[in-house]
Length: 395
Image (cartoon, rainbow, N blue to C red; front, side, top):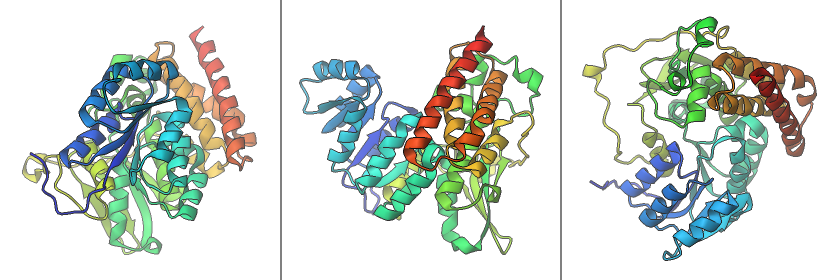
């Protein structure tokens, strides 16, 4: 049943990364509220893209893989959708779309330039690409401030913090409590982690996500990225963000104020809530997700994360404190290590070693980089080094 919510919905929406988990859920929200979809984009998922074009009739569809774009043009020649090709096509689509809100759910560093393009176009950014802030958070926030562009976080934790911050002023905030599910291996030792399989790693206990993010959740790298994202988005030092394991994934994050009051946001774990809030803010609308049933909930538990067994979480805080290109190096090394793990060339604990060794090797030089060009150049160099480290471990 469609929503009859009284709030002002956007005239249309653009969804980057429409074939991924968040992108598909964003399309669900758009369909539920009858929001027209003007632009979609993906890398190369042709069959799903064709289904989305025929279901949502977007004016524009950008495909990063140029051969896939050519194939899609043939497949949907009978529709009114225009296909744009390559990374340049995605940027051109952002410039051309008339959608006032753009959801960026592109995976990895590839989402950075689209994030900047959305900001430069002056559109509201519903941000699900955390790597934009990990790689170049200060540049992203600087441009958004100069352009007067709203960035509405779509990650469940940052969406929660954004909502909780409305209970007070920034100078009244003492601490952000960033919740974590703990992933599928909460409580494991390093030795036990070294023996887990790819299938076990991809079986997240709560959230349904893509393979790469699910691995990041298992290593707590995802939480490290979210710590950096929170510090950037909300203008706080990393030491003012504390990660707490909340296994039930019901409390999505909290804000502690100077009067010792803690404001928390609770809901069933479903990303559609976060996407919808970014589209309807500052109003709320009737949603797709079920209400929280406190009587069947039972108990909520809280634990400290194990930074010794899962070293990428404290490494992320250190990388943000060092600044410059160090967070970008962290992200690049992790992308390469996770790709090798998903290809069954590394074990899970090898990811820790490849990432830690790469960041250590590049920290001194990377911390001095201040320009976007310099940051991306160092990140590319670190990516190649991490790839070599991963290959050496395979052999």
